[in-house]
Amino acid sequence: MSDFRRRELLAVLAGLTAFGLGMGEAWASPSKKSKRQQTRKSVGKPTPPTITKPKPKLVVLDPGHGGKDPGALGARGTQEKKVVFTIAREVQRELLAGGRYRVLLTRTGDTYVALRERVARAQAAKADLFLSLHADSHDNSDVRGASVYTLSEDASDREAAALAARENRADAVVSGMRLADKSDNVAQTLVAMSQRGTVNESRRLAETIVATFAKNGVRLLPRTHRQAGFAVLTSAEIPAALVELGYLSNPQDEKLLTVRQHQLSLARALRASVDAYFGAGAATRKA
Ligand SMILES: [Zn+2]
Image (cartoon, rainbow, N blue to C red; front, side, top):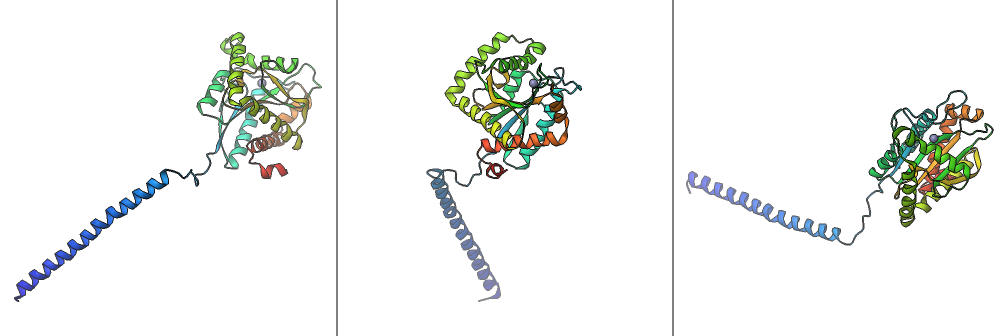
């Protein structure tokens, strides 16, 4: 064999080897692919989503009033819209710190947002929970303490009815919405809410807040959980409560609501309430 021929032969052999390897790969890949397809098929059918982490719950915080609507005013000039916004921000921080929740605020600054717009924002975001934060005022400056409200067509008492009327006025004054529209809205929402179980869930939420506040030393009104036709609580799908954090008409409450330490302890009590409501608060319940 001449050198030339030997080289030619080697070249052919090399080519065959390369071809053979190529074939091997070419065969290997489709068989791997089909295995993958098979596994994909078998995963797709019966197994429930086992490893997927539960989606963090979305909590919508609703600091009452804002912009041209200052809300209740204290004797020392404290504005409801300001204290509830500061506290809502603290609640947001508390909730985000644990990594279990997503949090949205219905207003992120000192702006006026209509009550139905607040409801619409929570609905659009598909909130799991809606908490409206307020601070009340009373003719009797001795009245003090926090209270919690849920939606009802018939108010639990005259004071709750008067409070709902005061809170609902935010829309009537600024956007000129008729009150008749609102009571129709409350009745309709309640029907839809009871069909979906939201009435019971809202009640459970309110009672959880009352119990958690009591455990955390937050002063409460007697018969704390009350009901009335609050326009801001009219979302059929979202369990919702309105919390009055204290009375700006009471000198001690007004002072406390502006003290950072008290604002933080209210925020912690609200976070603990949300934890307890979602049943995730094993550590919280000990506190
Ligand atoms: Zn208010």
